[in-house]
Length: 430
Image (cartoon, rainbow, N blue to C red; front, side):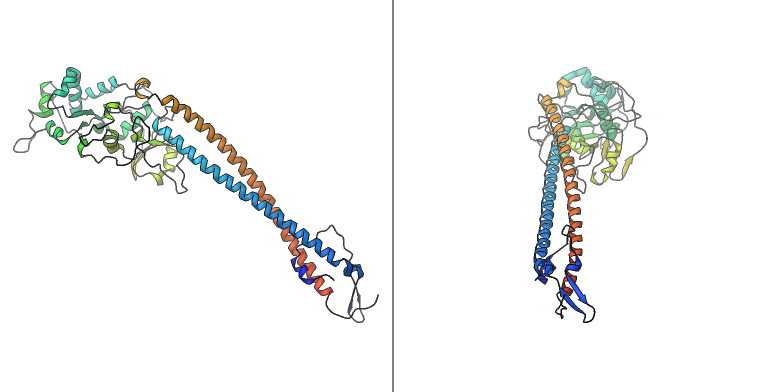
């Protein structure tokens, strides 16, 4: 006889084995008794076995689809991890060698790249500035100028101590710093700062000594204030450098969105986009630090550079020390936005010549960049393919689950009927 507990394990009665209810029982209306048919007694167990086996098959199918879903999810997770590593490597190379193939501001005045000589000329046009006097002295006296006690501790002018690979970037960085900072004099020690300006007993400037006296001697009377940066008193960058980088770029932590990913359009940090002459990279400050970790880290800190203004604004939660976009956007600091048209900056960082600025490893790095981008494209294709397979497996799982639930509902109804049919009551003869 068909067992009741087997009915509770059954999930669905498939439509394949057709059933004739008249063969299972007959009811005598006079005495309300049930008559069990021979087919029910002889074939009930076979039918229950079929239900149990079919239920087991459905469960195995669901388990198979579940395993496929997990496999595809694990594959996608692994591929996304590899993609993030490729993104990191690409960003590192971009930070090392900024590409000139970048957006420019819509209202940008298209001028030819500024050379070192033109930068010097722009400084000298500031006739009554301290920087103009220093450059005039260098032009007329050359290397002997640095033997003069007054200027022997002067390293140079900010605008001449760094170069860029991209004239548009040079224009943006110069606008960000402003003319006054671009014209700032850089000294190694505070003793050198004190030599540039002296005071009488009343605390008034002594016009006959220091830069004031030097300017007067060459017909350039110094007028107004001027900035002097003392490397000895700057707080240097205390972190690591990018390994095997001839330019000793700073190994700064990249910005991260709440989801852990680097913001779209992030190009790098401004402090790492300045090219520095090899003579200024090592131990140029009195405390043994180079220009990047002292002067330029002080000027730019962790100023971020993005491809577009839209990218920059989207990354606002990640910006702590200002940002630039290569199409002209500027954020000076948190909450301080520069709006309006981009200025036509005359004095800017000069564009480095390919020969002088790029290390021998540049071509190899360009090759690595192309290879990494190709790998990233293939990785994205693999992720899309795995995602399609995952979606298909989830669809099959949902369909099989719906079939499973329907099976459960129908079998529950069947089990209830069988419980009634086996109720111990007086049977009527055929």
